[in-house]
Image (cartoon, rainbow, N blue to C red; front, side, top):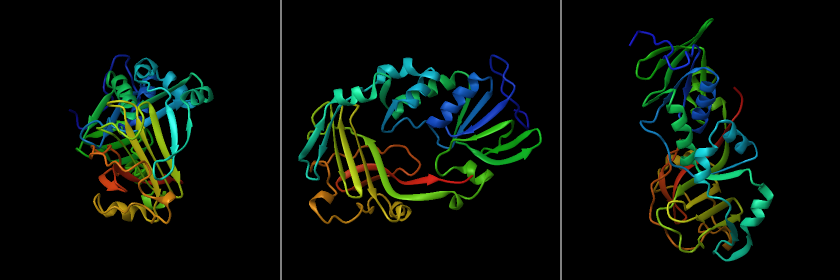
Length: 306
């Protein structure tokens, strides 16, 4: 390897190099599109391996259009879960009302897919890996803007020359920290804890082909029974100090605001206690118990400014 890497030679003779930090959905999608436009693509990912787990992703409207433009529909269509019955419940599990699958299908239309995040990640990764360089276990350590491009150093010591750097490394972006401003100047906490994960065992209290959802003051939860290997759960609750809750660790995490009535019970979807599944891979995911539910979880935040 030379002291400074220039563009890797791929079929088609790409000349312009882009370095993308983050091999998640955004980074892989950017890499695929830029490669199609003739760029030489290098994707670097801090994690040691791919992160192929995650929750359900609905692709309709602009999302479906984007998947179509990226050429992902042939790979994603066989993974489509389709529409399912939605059951709204009280905090104790009693049914409020049901929304039939046909109602949702009529509202959304035919140009729609529901897949797991892992299905979307796999479809993107398979396409990008054919023509791009993807490196795990490293990320961008330094970047210097020059008149004719960028001087980039990776965490493993590799030095690169590139014309474009894309930060697709999540809400706690290291690229934003390097190029624009410290995280403390760019994040606004939304004051919520959010978790989602696949279920190893089918939820016996939820009919097959349906999802139950509880929506209450300062909290919501859902459990989907879509068959073996496709069932999952999701929850979110209001939290005044999300970062402090994360710092407590998985076993001591608070279950959210104190319940003051049956409608605010932290057990929103029945009393069965599922076995602990592996947590999703996410920027702040940890395995924890909260309100009797095992979850991979993280705090909710948004970015502002540059």
